[in-house]
Length: 221
Image 1 (cartoon, rainbow, N blue to C red):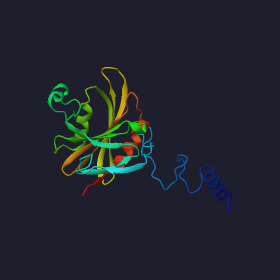
Image 2 (image 1 turned 60 degrees about the horizontal axis):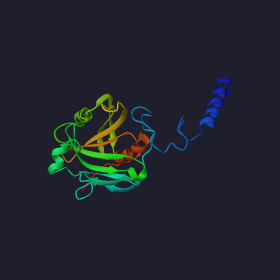
Image 3 (image 1 turned 90 degrees about the vertical axis):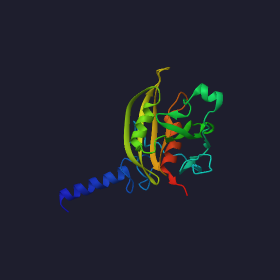
Image 4 (image 1 turned 120 degrees about the vertical axis):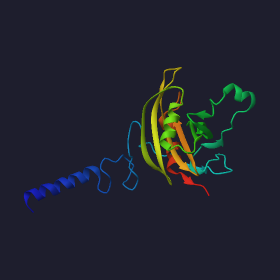
């Protein structure tokens, strides 16, 4: 073995000892090569935030979340259908609680008992709009100042999907928070899954349940 070969072999052995043979170089502690690597760490996607543990599913006709997909529920999170306001309440609040940017709220997954926030599922009012167009209108319909919106194409369980993230600055408080949304097509509809930071919820409070839900999307029978 010549000198250059010995040096190369010694370098490879040293690198193996430093990072651990059989594991990904630079992998976070506790994550082995058998687990999927984050796609984009940090702003805006935070893929390093792991999905929450699952405890049940929601979705499908006759379920508390009547949409044409099923998805896993995070432990401690509960799903219920959104009831559209009627009578005097409808006159007072109008569409403010259930409509946004050309979509209608259909289901809400409440994680407050588990220390989280809310995951909401919406359907596009126009069945012909593509997912990205639906997401653009949804973000624009917040009523506050929207900035830094980014998009990417992802795989969400059984579906090809489009995901977006943006910053919203409240007109009332001037506070800025981040939101995430993912849109898929199923049964002739465009569905939008959304979470956002709030006054008392941070990304680590809402992203784990969101990651679990969208990565486990499946068709209903």
